[in-house]
Image (cartoon, rainbow, N blue to C red; front, side):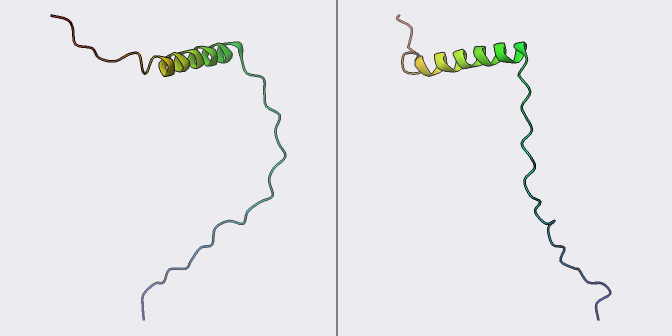
Length: 58
């Protein structure tokens, strides 16, 4: 006879979804950072094909 046994612990029961919490308006600084990030991402995508490592002319 084993000295101890393991019991299977079932996961906690799922609860009903909570009521949606209204989102707070984002701060001005957060909005500015988002705009800068979006512009930078857009530039990176546009410059992907045009910007390649070229060998310098000798």
